[in-house]
Length: 203
Image (cartoon, rainbow, N blue to C red):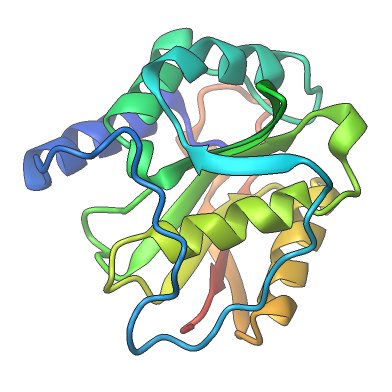
C-alpha cells in the first residue's frame, strides 16, 4: 500500500500548504461524528490502548515496518512527518508502553471527504487479534468531521490487506469499490506491482 517516495513527498507538501492548522499531540477523539452512521466497536485485544502518534513514536514505526516483509520501508524522516504533521491521522496501538501496531494516514488535499491509509501494520504477536480493525476504527472516528470515505491502495498479492479492508467495510456496513490506483508505469522499480484503489464508504 505504498506510493513512491516522490508521490508521498508531493502529497505532504500539498496538504501542508492547504492545511496549516496545528494539531494537538494528545488529540484522541473517540465519539462518532454528528450525522455519520454508528461504527460498531472493533474487537479489542486485552490491555491494548489506542492514541494518536507523537514525534517520539516515529523510530518505532520505522523499525516495525522494516521488520515486516510485506511492507516497504520508507525513510525514517517520512515517519517523523507522519507522527508530527499528520498526527491526527496517525494512530498507535500499544500494550504497557510497547508498540503493538499503527496506522499512518492523511487527508488527500483533492478529497476533503476522505482519509487515505498509507500504511497499517501490526506486530507479529498481535496479528489476528483485531488490532488492524481497531486502528481503522479509531482513525475514522478521529478524522475530520466531513470524512465519509476511507481509501487505500493494495497490491494484487497483498491478501492480508485486502482482507482487512473488506472486513472493515463489512463491519461498518459500508460499500467498498475497487479500481485502478497507481499503475506500474509510475514506479521506477521494474519489480513494482500495480496498486489497486480501495474506497470504503460513504459512512
